[in-house]
Amino acid sequence: MNEASQVVANVFENVRKVILGKDEQIKQVICCWLAGGHLLIEDFPGTGKTMLARAIAVSAKVDFKRVQFTADLLPSDVIGSAIFNQAKSAFEFLRGPLFTTIFLGDEINRATPRTQSALLEAMAESQVSAEGKTLALSPLFFVMATQNPIEQHGTFPLPEAQLDRFMMKISMGYPRAEDEIGLVKGQSHAHPIHSLGPVESEQRLRAAREAVSQIKVADNLYLYAQKVVAATRGHKELRLGASPRATIALIRAAQAMALIDGLTYVRPTHVYNLARSVIAHRLIPTSEARLSDKTAEQILSGILQEVPVPVS
Image (cartoon, rainbow, N blue to C red):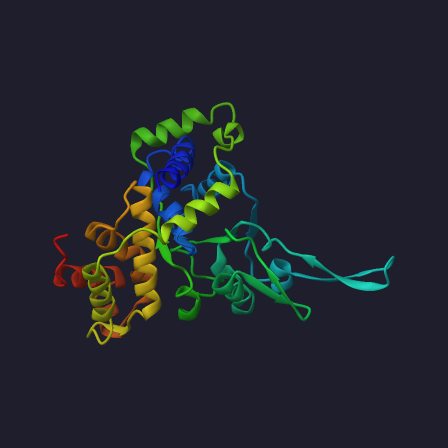
């Protein structure tokens, strides 16, 4: 367990050389990856979303592919397509960018629902069905998708089924003044990402992910997580609450964060602190709540205040 925590610490320390002042966000990304989930980052352009994904891929020495999602992007542009090989007089499947370890879908909501849905099987089962065959993806396959919260023209909002496939949703936020100055100074000659080197291997990362399941979870924390999720169902200000998938994701993410913190057990604060990132994007407020400017995050915050947090 100590070795797994050290692997994570090495990646974290390396990434924060490039992504300044965003330690919590870096931890959340690593947490989601270790937990076997996928991540949605919703934030304004230029806040470091793409650079964060690249820095993690470089630090862990894994394959990285980025696709800019647009309205004319086809599923075959992501998954791949069959190409006729004249030498062999047969069709061969040419793998698309989805066949990688870390896949960054930039501005995912700009693609049509048909293209968005091409990711569903890959995210749910780490495999792709194409040309009558089922092809396995990397054991560490991780989707990081981004979307801009302010631009709605020419976009296709992610449906609830697709949002539910993302274990966590976070935002980067603008840097503090001192961190922004540090970023500007650091890029005066060349971007720091170009001098960033690997500090871990894919094999050691796989071992760290396997160690997540060994993190102990007390029965009262299982109950606490279930109560928080169950409280979203039938809530007067929510049209759609969270499914059992949210409960599973919350516990799994809490185990991963405990490992990141160098612990062998989950603390109540792990579950509480991760609840917003894991649950909020799965909720749909009622029309009345929206008219009152109530967001899913605000409603969930109220629920978290009402459900007692276990003492230990």
